[in-house]
Amino acid sequence: MTGNTPVSAQQEGVSTPVTIGELLQSAASVIDRVDARWLLQSVLNVNAAFLITHAELLLSMEQIVYFQQLLARRVTGEPVAYLTGERGFYDLVFEVTPAVLIPRPETELLVEMALSKIPLDRRCNILDLGTGSGVVAITIAKHRPDAYVTAVDLSPLALAVARRNARRYSMENVVFIEADWFSCFVREKFDVIVANPPYIVEGDPHLEADGLRFEPSVALVAQNNGLDCICRIIAQTPDYLEQSGWLMLEHGYDQADTCRRLLDKTGFFHIFTKSDLAGIDRVTGGQYGLVPA
Ligand SMILES: C[S@@+](CC[C@H](N)C(=O)[O-])C[C@H]1O[C@@H](n2cnc3c(N)ncnc32)[C@H](O)[C@@H]1O
Image 1 (cartoon, rainbow, N blue to C red):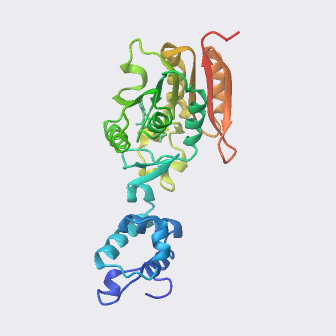
Image 2: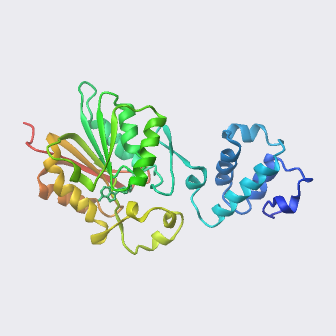
Image 3: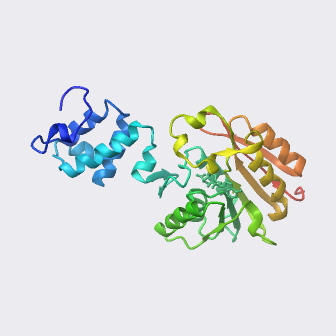
């Protein structure tokens, strides 16, 4: 293997042994070095330390060919998480498929805010709207074993992934329901409602860039300038919140003011907005019902 030429098993032939180090070096000429490591870890089913400590290990032709297939798909822009089938979120690793949004680090803020409002000393009912792979619901359920988490999504394919993720962690305090936001509930009330709804404006050029074009548009795009789902959720939430319960929403970088206005108009109090690690307004929420004395 020489210079900047991407690895080719056919080129190399079975007679030319390739080591982990050589394969990674070659791949790094066409994709990001970290992505190359993730792909090889997935092919070999090893961790990052193994790649470093076994750089001289010779790979089999099957391993090289499989890696090349993933590399070729990565070169077209397909996200690493869809290629490896996994993504870390908060302190767990979740299965992801192209049926679900790839969990984002900024959504961990939504989980943190929810955890901060869920008391440890009593059983609470939590609702996660638009659960996708189930990361928010499962992480909350894991950190609050006394809470009972209900998670809703419109997509049966996404719910299948979420249910597998819940089984992976033997979760017994989370249930998944196929529904259009609150449509499956009659009289249920929740202490905390969280949502990371679709909020990208239809036709936003970012949708064609990077990995976004591989992700389900039902998870990304919302009508009404990206605000349709947010508006519907805020408008319907009062019917499903316990007295002084909390609603928290993840939103786009320029949607915090609108969310705050909508919450205020709907009768929420203690309205807050939190920025993510990039300093971007990301989660807005408030409490509903009687203002505590
Ligand atoms: C931005 S993704 C969030 C996924 C996951 N909660 C996360 O944070 O990674 C939005 C999710 O909302 C779901 N969704 C879109 N419209 C919906 C609706 N009307 N009712 C319920 N879920 C909906 C999508 O299928 C998608 O899984």
